[in-house]
Structure formats: structure tokens, C-alpha cells
Length: 254
Image (cartoon, rainbow, N blue to C red; front, side, top):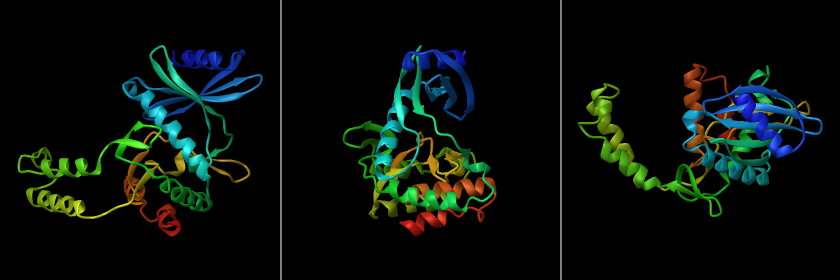
């Protein structure tokens, strides 16, 4: 069914016969299809049903992030079109031929390049906070840092569900609350964060050019802290906290 929808979207866009439509993987939010015609190859990202309620807005955000980061020198596929078809959100991108960065045996060059890209991405100024981009022209994200802190401070009480579920105890809850209160007194720099920096989200061409993919998790957040904390978290999840040099390069190039 999804294959058929992708082919129809491709035909409407290209207006020429489609030779093939091949699934090239999926993530938590999208299915990806490689479309081939006699003249062109394109990629169609088709939203999954459970993300349909905000998929179109997320694709608009991805398009904005790709355009802004491209101007800074970050390589990646370009967005050709986006919209809705049969109640499914989609985004059409240029096809980039390459190997997924996760499959590289030696990733040092990849991680260093991602570190440089991260510095460029963080230089993109934003207003507001969070993952929902509400004003594309003025770079305004929907939420605010102050509201985020206040919400957490007010939530950290004796009746907090995290205590009832034994995620943390009361003493730890008080310690976390004190940290949030201290954060209100500190000044931070805010900018665009990719939100999912990893070898998996790259395509490396034969020439060595590194293409960055998947801006669905991008946020307006503290730079460089947010992206850096995600990298540390992902390393701990993979139980390989010392094998990834990307974190060091983010700090080196900032």
C-alpha cells in the first residue's frame, strides 16, 4: 500500500513513467522510498500513521533546517517538494549516492566532519525553544526555556509520578529541583540543534563528502549542550562511551 502511494506521489511530481519504487529503510517516523525514472532518481519520505498528526509540520521544519544549514555549508539532500496525499504527509528529496556512515570501518574522518557541521548548525540563531517551529520566516520555535524550567520545577513534588514509580526518590527529586532552579539564574546561548547526530544519519560519497540526514528531531535549544548531551546518552545506550570521538570534536570546533 505505501509503495503504491509513493509511486503515485512520484508520478504526480515527475510527470513521467516510474521505472521502479524501492523501499530503502524506515525509521520511527518515516518510510523511505527510492524512485527511479528514465531521467531522474528521487527519494520520498512517507510519514507513518502514528506520526500523521504532526508529520506535515515536521517536514516543513526539516525543509527549513536543511535550507538554513545548507547555506552554512552543511551537505545533504535538498528538498524538492512536500505536501499531503491521501491523508499522508510526504517529502521529496534529491537522491544522494553513498554508503551509510555506520558501515564505515574507520569513522574518524566522519566524526571530525560531523563536529565541523555541528559548529555550523549551532551558529544558526533561533528564537523560542523546543522542537516545534511555529514561524518559519522569523525562526521562532513554539515553546520557551522559561516555561520549560517552570514546568519541571512545579512538577518535582512529593506527589510526582517518578517517585511513585521509584524512578527517583524524594531526596533525588529535591536535588534535581535545585538544579532546575539554578538553571533559571544562568544565561545560555540558544541556536539550532540537529538532535540526532550519529553515523547512522549520514551518507558518505565515494569522494569522501559527508551528507547529513534526518532533521526530524531538530530543536531550538542550548548550544552546544543539547546535541552534546544526546551524543553522551546514545553512547551510554550503546555501552560504548569511549569509542566515539564526535563529542570531542564538537567541543574542539566550537
